[in-house]
Length: 427
Image (cartoon, rainbow, N blue to C red; front, top):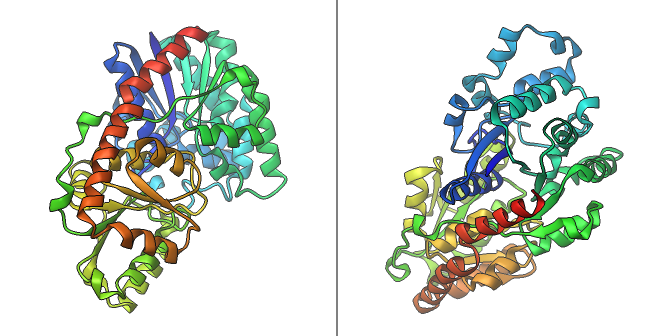
C-alpha cells in the first residue's frame, strides 16, 4: 500500500509531539512493508528537516504568510518563492515569535480551510498536482483537522480515500476570537464530509471532538499513539539521583511555571535537599519572556545550582535526559489529547506525575506507570512529587509497570497494524 502522510512541521524548534507522532507512524508503517511518503507543510518536520532534500515543503510558512497579509506577494517570481521556501529561510522562521501560534493567524486559518476558494489556491494546486503525478498514493492521511481544506481537491483529483487524525485542534482554535472560532469549527465540520475516516489519538479526545465537530459515529475511530519499546534503554531507577524532569515546549500553556513553583516549594523542606530539576523541550520566540521570568524565580529562591536547563532535546541529549531523571511531570494547564512524551518517558522506565486532565488519566491508567493529582496547582504537584521522588521501591514499581504498559497498550507496531486495517477497510 502507498500512503501519503501530510504533516505540518514545527521546524525542529521545540519538542513537537504531533510531528513526532506522525514520524513514528511513518516508520512503523514502513516496517510493515508499506510505502509511506512524508509530505511536510509550512515548516520542516521536527527532527526530520533532511526530508527537504526528498520532498518539497508545500505551503512554505514565509511564502504563505506574505501572500495572506500582502496581496502583492501573490504574484512574485518563481525564484523568489523558491528562496522563501528554502531550508535556511524556513529554519529562521521556525525560531520567530508567532510561527506556531494561532493568535494573529485567524484569517489565514480560515483561508486554508476554504481550500480552492482561499488565498492559497495556487499552493493547493501545486500540492494536488504533486500527489497526483509524483506520489500517486492509495490513501492520503492528514495530520489534523486544520488541514481539511485540502480534502476536497485531493479527493476530486486523486479519487482515493482520505484519513484525518485528530489531536489538539482545540488548542489552536479555541484561543481565537469570535467570530473566527465558530467559523473554523464549522468549516472543519463541512470539509470533513470529504473524509472517509477520522482517527482520534485517545478516547478522551474523541469525546471532546464530538462537542466541536459534526462527525458521523461510524467514521470516528480511536487509535492510540505508540512508540517502539525497543528504541528505549531504561536505566535502573533505583540507581538514579532524585532528579525531576520536564520534557515539552517550555511555555506557559504546558505548565512549566507550575512545576517550577512546585519545585521551589519542595526545596523548602530539608528532606528534599538533594532533589534537582532538569528542563528541556525547546522554545519559540513567544516563550523567551516567560522563560526569563521562570529563571528569575529560580534565582530569587537561590536554586540556580539545583536546576539544569538543556537547550538540545533531540538524539543523544534526549537519551541523556531519560538516563538521568527519575520522575517526569509536564503539568499542562488544560490537559491535552495525548502527549507523546508520556510514552517516551514510560518506555524509558521513568514514572509520570501528571494532573488528572485531558488524556493523562487514560494513559497513566492503562500503563500503570504514573500517578495523577488534582487540582493542577503547585501545592498539589509538590505533594504528589514528594510522595514518590525519594521512595525507591515505589519508583521501581511504577517504572516496571510503565514499561510493561507501553508494550501491552502503546506498542507502535500494534497501533500501526490497526491503522493499516482501517486503511484497507476504507480502500
